[in-house]
Image 1 (tube, helix red, strand yellow):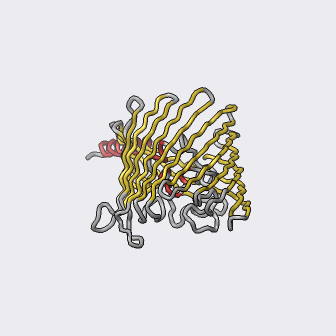
Image 2: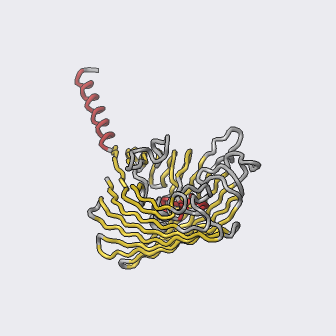
Image 3: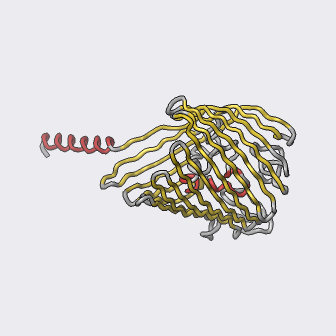
Length: 360
């Protein structure tokens, strides 16, 4: 090849390389959510507690996401998110760097397929839009039987269909990776939603298979969760209604909840959001949980205010009150109790959190 041809080939190769890099993007983003909190009936059940609060509305995190245009409408995507506690800088999940997302996949007009550590469809489509979030402020997924209303799972493959006339579906499979068994430790999640204008309807079904032996119970124990939700907005008002039914067949090592005896329970959340001004929104929620096997129940009443100082920075005020009856031991803020739910039987608890939330 003569020198001119070699130079032309080199220039062509450089142009192709530049084109590839030009179609690749990486974004660094995250959130810091912290403040001051007060809780009564904490500690031994008769003490008050004041201190720094992490994760008033969500776990603080920093992440890296990106995409590469592969041509023909196909894109490679990835998402890595590391959760942390602003109060001490520690990882939000000990020993897990990318505890909030760790996935890679492909996206096209036929949908999105991803592999890795991922959130279920409850968190994607229901938490925030129907069930209000918050890790220390009275959320439905803090109840003993309902952690999978918002949960992230290891070793998963997830498919999300494109939206067609407002309809969208999805499926996720988590491999238990137990030698000699496909079912042991397996998780699957099916979901569908309809979103058109101010109306949102969504339904999901989660199924987790026990991953080990607890006492005399084998890995055949299952955790099943069915979740339904709807929201509708008109003017400055958005109404929300969510329902979840939990069915735990017996003790088992599940990915989302600790071992507990066989039980069934349901929970209902009704909420209202009102935009008082373009920068201030108030929310009111009532959550009712009923364990139909043990005949106990819990109620949470919650008020939330968010004042936006800018598009990225908000001030937060959250107050919640929880009551237990029939021997229920749920809690807003964990106590010294070793009971399931983290609280003391039949005891109420109130919590107040004032904080700041910054997106970057």
